Length: 162
Image 1 (cartoon, rainbow, N blue to C red):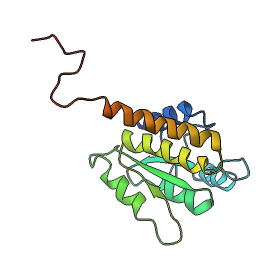
Image 2 (image 1 turned 180 degrees about the vertical axis):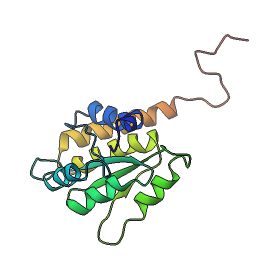
Image 3 (image 1 turned 90 degrees about the horizontal axis):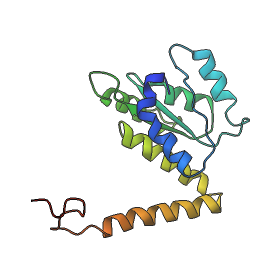
């Protein structure tokens, strides 16, 4: 993430990766304040064993694109609602990468961060059968949560209250 403040949003990606047992690192690397660190981080990503990078950034959101420009490790960008534009500026910055430097762009905010964690797990699961099975079970649990809901009835916790 570009700033420690971004962790309020990016923690959702961390929670998903942790839930699935995916090893990960959490770093603050700013495209504007630490460009040399950014370039080193990206240039060494593959040799350090990184297989996917999730980059959260607000404002001009240069972090995901600059990472993608310096590595062939897939980069997933999460727009952070850090300015008065509530992440629209970040979304447009990340999603408009030039041809040849792709960044997978997720939704603005916590939902995007959670989906980035899930998407990263899905990418890794293409070569990890155990992780794939965890994802299948996780999806089945989400399906079952929906199927257990009965339309027109009060949730169990609310039953009996009038």
